[in-house]
Length: 339
Ligand SMILES: Cc1cc2nc3c(=O)[nH]c(=O)nc-3n(C[C@H](O)[C@H](O)[C@H](O)COP(=O)(O)O)c2cc1C
Picture (tube, protein in one colour):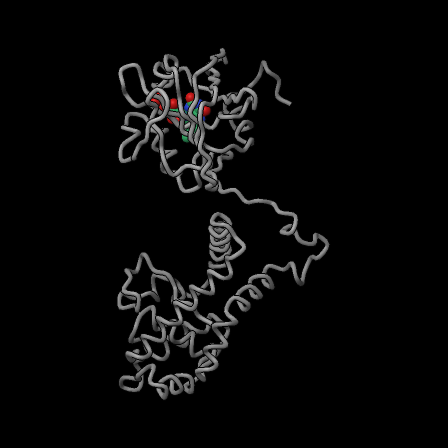
């Protein structure tokens, strides 16, 4: 254990960073009538009766003078999509309120919107706290907007993931129903079951859909290129698949080699995309906004981890062309649902 006499400030900071907090922006109005604010994660609750909260203010902060003299301040608990607000209120030498719509609270303190909760306080007590001053505020009014909070841990922003008992799973199952491959596959196939049933009613199968999906990310590819792209699904594409799509007038084979959408094919690909989006919404029904974001972020990490060594034609920048069905630029592309 590190003793008080030999505390290294960097290590101390790192150890403190293992305490997970939310992120707040504290605001006030200076005696000169200027709006002042800063990002603070030292916020905490103190008392319910009377209602008291605290945060600590760095004495060296350029806002210190204003807060030391203030009669009121407001604490905003930032929502998960307010990382940029947190950064803006931590930046030196900028107008931290630029571009923000403000309301006013007691003592004309500026109030920000979009947050998870906010407390307007009377500055009741100040305590010495080394290089910080502990500011205690009596809550005069508050709003709770129910938005998911922004999280701060180890110097990084995070998202809150609730650890519900039902999500923990059976720790004894080491393979089978706890194997990542099974979970990914099962979720994928279940999510697309309604879509697949519809596709089959049209006399098409997964491979047909995958060809249409690859084509929607860039029209006019060769048969060989489309076949190579679809093989990432583990399916082998045969001539009969192209012939089947052509017979249904969803594609035309120009010069027997270049595959292009017909108008009906383009429409059908867009319908598949819409059905895919609706299947996604259904799949995310039991996830809140944060959990859905987190799931996608984690899956992207799995994709990155398993990506090295893939042939270059499966890299997005290589298969996504400007003439994609969605009219999107290469950089902002998202894939069409494929079965
Ligand atoms: C996540 C985070 C938490 C912070 N927490 C505090 C805090 O609790 N108290 C504080 O005085 N400054 C805190 N700061 C620093 C201030 O927001 C601000 O960056 C600092 O006071 C420098 O501002 P200045 O240039 O106006 O002095 C925090 C910054 C960040 C990014």
